[in-house]
Image (cartoon, rainbow, N blue to C red):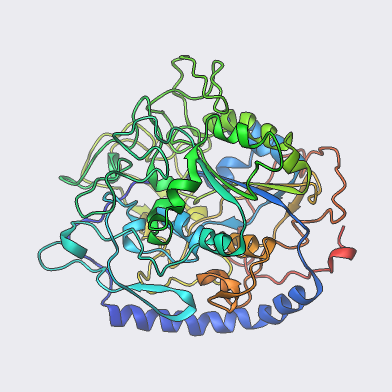
Length: 534
């Protein structure tokens, strides 16, 4: 996630104007989804997902589809090996910019709001909220006041949602579904974050600094610029979705369900009985591909993230290279586990397609930064200039700002994409791609059905039999309950008998073109009942 802080007074339209814009968007979306709603309803009547018993979701950072899945970077394990085990969803999208809003949307169905869009430099409360349409919660005091403050005197908009905002994990509690979050490096420095749960210490408050606060080219002059990570602790709370909801903090769920990854994941994988039904895995800021040059070392030279054994190879190369090192250790361990072999599903995905990437996979935010007058002007979708000397070649931003699935902006901002690179980003989290591996998935297959983070949430709710409550009365939270939104279907679960198949190269030689185009993302897809799928 790119680190961005708001500057000065709010430039967003007044609340009434935003409400009017949302209303217009709802009307437009109504026309757009009208044709797809009947197809989605027919799909739900004729097809049910397979009996997935265990899910592992691994969330990586800040890469567009073209950076990750075109073979142009040092990440052959992600772009070639993993798709040979499963299906590559070539049109999987984030829901906003910048990073943390995507994590919160994934688990709650809530649309982006200003605090999470700024990556929450302070661990402060949103303050009062009220429920509005589609299960969304409007933050009542999210606009900057004349004295420059927000809720309770904080200088930044709020991030920790009150108890009435529910999450997938609250649904799991009610459904008696076991779950756990595994966070790499969490608790390695307990002066930065809690050893369990991983929340900034001492707890939510207007002056409590998030140790993952913004720095570098996107931090405004005079703004908070604390280091995002340290040499010995590369964990950041903004990549952990649990500590941002009082519905998980106040009842102890966060503290009891979120643990350091090292040793705990490996121990839990030893038997199906000890493996949670749902596992969320957040690598650290190096292993998730966020940092091009890491504050500490990557996992080369014999370091083992599963056992916690650390070597000192003095290798700080990050990006997709570091992500491959992490995935090469974690994914095989999961696939060897009894729980995976008895109806498991692994999903390797990204939070957002941002920032723009050159062919070697680094972003302008990750390069060595030389301050200048400010972020350069972006013309159209493919050029950048005057940015402190960090851009040596043109960067394609087109995939950073597109959206799919009739995504609506929500009540708290009309710009989920946060005006990324001066482009119209209403909405947009960018196309990232996603790889899903399971005995119920045909190795080497590809789907071009559009999905986003709300689709993912709806899919998890469906897999674990959550059928009551939510914004649609059928168990789907927030925008996961949107009309016509498709969960993962038989294009993903395309091996319905669950017979284990040999790995198979995916696509034409394993190299995939970036296929997202605005004229394609809403095209209809015909589903077959499960028993007739390939």
